[in-house]
Amino acid sequence: MAVKESEKVFEQEGQNFNSMVPGSTAKKLRTCIIWQFIRFVAINIKMIIVVSKSH
Amino acid sequence: MARLVVLGGGVSGHTTATFAAKWLGSGHEVVVVTPNAKWNWIPSNIWVGVGQMTKENVTFDLAPVYAKAGINYKQAKAVSINPEGSESSGKPFVSIEYTEAGKEGVTENIEYDYLVNATGPKLNFGATPGLGEGSQLGEHTVSVCTADHAVHASHELFKCIEKMKKGERQKFLIGTGHGMCTCQGAAFEYIFNIEHELNKAGVRDMADLQWISNEAALGDFGMGSLHMSAMGYVVNSRIFTESLFTERNVKWIIGAHVNRVESKKVHYELLDGSYGEESFDFAMLIPPFAGVGIKAYSKDGSDITDTVFAPNGFMKVDANYAAGDYANWKASDWPSTYQNPKYGNLFAAGIAFAPPHPISKPRVTPNGTPITPTPPRTGMPSGIIGKAVAHSICDLITKGENAPLHHASMAHMGAACVASTGKGFADGTAAAMTVYPVVPDFDKYPGTGRDTDYTFGEIGLAGHWIKHILHHLFIWKAKLKFGWTLIPE
Ligand SMILES: Cc1cc2nc3c(=O)[nH]c(=O)nc-3n(C[C@H](O)[C@H](O)[C@H](O)COP(=O)(O)OP(=O)(O)OC[C@H]3O[C@@H](n4cnc5c(N)ncnc54)[C@H](O)[C@@H]3O)c2cc1C
Image (cartoon, each protein chain N blue to C red):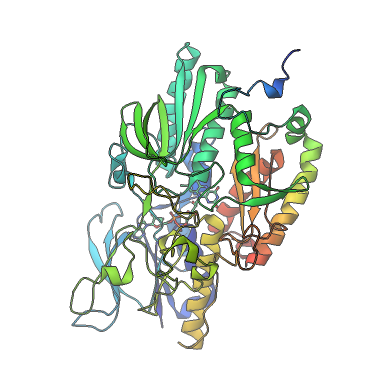
């Protein structure tokens, strides 16, 4: 079976074998403009809360 | 009429001076002593270092801004402080040496009623043989700590890209250049921005990317790592950081004290006491930070530098410097007013204050070499501290010397950080994080030391948009343009 694109980076004997990696959907969502616009709003709200707790 | 002198026109000192000038009005004088003619939005130096921004994009002239604010600006560096004055005058003063073109080396004593030391770090390249001399970068590696360094770094990067295009494999070594460094976040941003640019240039397959840092685990960032709430889990930053390194095919060496740099090679010692070396074609290693080396003298001229400053050159403030071992460390050790314990009219803000101890667990190799990330004091805490100090001093001036001081402890303050992992309107990404509080408080939050309702992180394009917007917002604010006071630190 062909190795999935996101799993090509693993080295069986290497330091990264126990790491988690994002699958293709998670990776696509990172630069999906619509999803990221929603995240933009959400992250800003979270940041504003932390900033206002800190001043 | 009182005079406030602010040493350092960086993130913290600029905040102190501009708010103090606004709040005090023309009835009192604010003086800024800073050696550079330009203000630099340092976080965007990363983008200068990969050729995605120019020096002009991240700097602007200070003189017109200070003229507009009614601030007396002296392009000079502070050399010493006489907090008790001299035998001929009881008035405290600071001795400065001009760096302004045409006036270089001219000295002056400036009397003050209140003094804020916001001189940031000395980039202590000289601490590692081969990394540089004193605060000067050496010839073997590059840096992104100043805008000029970053311009040089981008030129060296382009040379490597050209070589790769011609079929020559290149190795990039990025991280920290000493066992006691802080600012791992900047190196983290730089390695992933390089990786992003190499992909864009179509030469990623010709590059080996290697991280080297003094963190005991990836994701420590000098904050003893952080636990975040994500996907219904509480997850340590190590998991996310290792994931990103794996995904982007970056190898890592951690727990490393770089002890010597040569042409195309570093030597290091690891936490287990073993030694190693790593070759490179291009290296960016963050230097350790120290205080800028200001001296202090008593009324009779004797040297009292060790009364005012800690051995690392940072200024002593209202922190608990006697906490002792790691097991005794408490969030309450961290300062909150930033007032010098001996001289009440002396304050320190931003990186210039001496932290009581690291945040990350201190570690020593079997050979006795300490390898411990020192605590970060990033932009948001530096700005908030600068503003709190301005508030305190304005109250002391206008309400009298018994006015209560304002507090801004890093143990009660959060930080929003956005770490770029590649620039681009549609293909850029950044890790957007909040951490609350910056210094973990295991008494208040016994599990992770932090409130996981307010400590989160995620990577994506939205983070990049936020980072880019913040670049413009903070430069707008620093230029004191319309509505600047409404933009939070
Ligand atoms: C490459 C890089 C990227 C970074 N990215 C981020 C980021 O993304 N987010 C974030 O929050 N933080 C980031 N930081 C950290 C941030 O830049 C610092 O937290 C902030 O600059 C600290 O402010 P400061 O005023 O204490 O010091 P500085 O901003 O360094 O200011 C110190 C000032 O004092 C002046 N000075 C020095 N010596 C003297 C003297 N003898 N007399 C008078 N003045 C003197 C200096 O010229 C300078 O103007 C980054 C740092 C680096 C190096």
